[in-house]
Length: 253
Image (cartoon, rainbow, N blue to C red; front, side, top):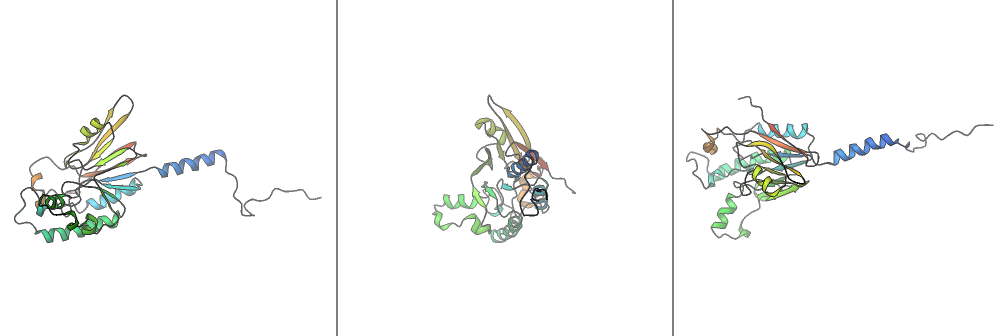
């Protein structure tokens, strides 16, 4: 008489039952990979950014396995239309814009899905149109001009209760985070890169300044020359908004 044998689950196409520990490991892996890991790119100021800044940001994105991207603003410089003095020997408006669009195309190819918090340089053209009483219907959207159809241009964005904002209106990250008791990430200040923690009665919040990627030797950055050195780098916010890290860019020159 043949003994009844237990069916071979794999032979009949069924999945063997996982142990409690195995299931726990899988659940932890899924939860970890579901958390937001945000790459925060500093002020770019195209076309006056360092040419190696893009690759630095790509490498940082890959190193920290990021799954979201925030440009912290001033992705375009608009030097030709600045409210401050412009370089008389610099490029004309059309040439500068064409070069900026070419540079931004490389950023878009690298990061096609991203938030852009609108900076003061980004908004120069819009502001001048408004001050000239030009109706908004006459003005093209950022994505249409720059060829970035999937980018989301916003005043600010909140991810995991962390606020990302350019900083030209909201003040420095330290001041904004302390005032609002909300973790805050800013750009705008080219010589700032830091993470500070503040503690209230019921929670802790951080302030992060992410630096920039500008080429301080370019004519558009004349106001930087002779002053403090620019803070070249970017930031990441990991663990669902709990772990902010600034990454300094190591230079060869």
